[in-house]
Structures are given as structure tokens and as C-alpha cells.
Length: 396
Image 1 (cartoon, one colour):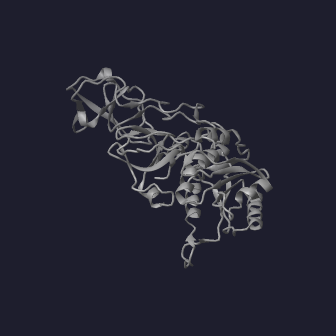
Image 2: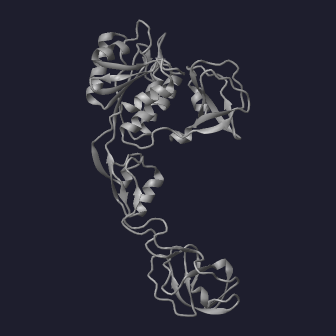
Image 3: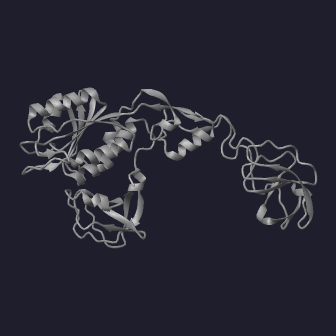
């Protein structure tokens, strides 16, 4: 069995990123990956502007306590005229600073009388100004190639005057499940049957990466059906994910079928849950075989599949950020495999779910993070662990 670190290294080294590029509008660009760097079409802001509501002045003309006349009014979006010497201009947030002014006095520090104003404090040049190009300068790089676009990135691009971006096309990912026991929610359960929860977990995880998800019917427990289903999915999609059927039971046909159709490059990891994770190719199409237990599906997707998909989409950053947080629990028996335990971050500590069984899917909803316990490690309360907050994955 490979360690998680070695398996991740091998997986990412085998990625062939997409080459297909398309141009989309910003409203369709969320969670797409930039295929080229993008540059600002303007200075941001495009002129010196006021950061507050107040009065634009030349600082040298102002003396605390002295009255000066107000010569013009400048709302946002209106071009000012040059400031008359010895006067102030009423200005609002975002208003363009008039030529001749070099400071803004916020209205809370002013007194007014008819068309005059006086300042309660001494004014300094540059007070409450946002200089031209403070945020971005024309022709400067706004975002690099490989950037996975988040909501704030769309705002940055729009502010730079960019309305369309070059992105890699969306991945098409096939989702299959193996097992005669699987039934769709809403149907009555016969003895021995269970609902196909993994399909919906994977759909949500993949959709969160703006991936086109294609679902296929559950695969019956036969080698011929397994081989046919995998071959069909691989011919229609960029990557295939199956759940179940990768263990060593008599009804587990995925491993043999992938070997027949292509190559199995990785099987079994030193991780818990998720030991029987499989990776390979069906023809030239990458394949991940995830375990059937629902928690193992959730964990192995986050640890192994998600970084691979991001790399395949051309993203520069593929691994989730972790945080070191003290545990509020103990683990007295060390495990030879690296464990990913469901925890909740509360009051700066990690609190563990009562059951870590890989069939208890409700633990993943209760939790807001996965804590990583390295192999052969015991834990005492107060020990710091690496944790992957759900918020760093975009699933909270």
C-alpha cells in the first residue's frame, strides 16, 4: 500500500491538463480556470477619488477653525471643475477630486453655515483620498493563468474593465455505482437494498467545481455489465468515477474490468477511511474507483480526486489549505494508516464525532472539517492536528 503523500504525488504527476480553451462572459465564469493571464484595461480607480463623504480642499489653504466658502458640489459620476483657491468642494464617496485639491475632510470633522464650512482639525495632504491606480494600474496583470475563479475574482476582473475571459472548458465526469443492492431515493426498499447516496454526494462535490456531471445507471454485479458500463462512460467523458466494486469480494468486478480495458496504476492506500481506492485508465480516459462506504467516498474525493480534477482543469493551486488546531479529544490506539476523522471546529478546538465508522454518513454533515491523524500516532487533548476546514473546500 502507498502512503497518502506518495499516492498524491503519483496522481498529480500523471495528470494531463485540458488543452481546450473557450471565451465566456464573467457571469458564466465562476469556478472556471483562467487559461491565460488577464490585464487591466484601466487604472482602478481611474482618477483620484474621495474615500468618504466630506469636502475636497487644498490642505495648505485650510486652517483649523477658519470658515471658507463652498464653491461646487461633486457627487460620484460627475466631472468636477478646478477648485477655486481658498474654497472647498462638497464631495461624496467616489467623487473625483477636483484639480487643485489634495485632501478630503470628512463631514464628521466639519461645521457648516449656509454656503460655508469650517474644519475642526488640521488638514493634511492626502487625507481620505484614493489615488488613481491605487488598486490596479492599466495594463498590469489582474489575475494569472491557472486561477480558479472565485466570486471576488469576478469583481476584480469587472472592476478592471474585463467583460470576457479565456478559460479551460468544463470537464465532463462520469459517475457510476456498482451493486445490485442500489436503489434511487423515492423507491421502496426491498430486503437487502440501500439507497444510492453516493451518487448525490459526488454530484454535489463535482458541481461545486463547476464540472459537467453525467450519471449512469447502477452497474449490475457481473463482469460483462461492469466492463460495458465503464467502456461506455470512458468514451463519453473526460474522467470516470465509480463507487463500490473495488474490493476483493466475488462480486467486485471493477478492478478486473479496468485492467482488461486499460491499466490499473494504483490500488490501496494507507488511509482510513478509503483504503481500497483505485486509480488507472480506461483506454486513455482517467479512472477513479472509490470505495462503496459513503464516508470513504466523501474523504477519498477530497483527498485524492479533487486535487486531480483541479490539476486536470489547469488550476495552479490544487491542494486545500489546512490549519493547525488543538484537539479536544484523545486517540489512545495508533493506526498504521493515516486517518481522516470528522470533526467540528468550535471555540478554537477540534471536537470529534462520536462514531468514526465509514458507514455513518451523518458524521460528515455534523462536521465542518476533517482532521488528519498521521500513521502510528496517538493523540492527547491539546495536541495540534492538521485540519481541512470544509470552508477551504467551498463545501460549507
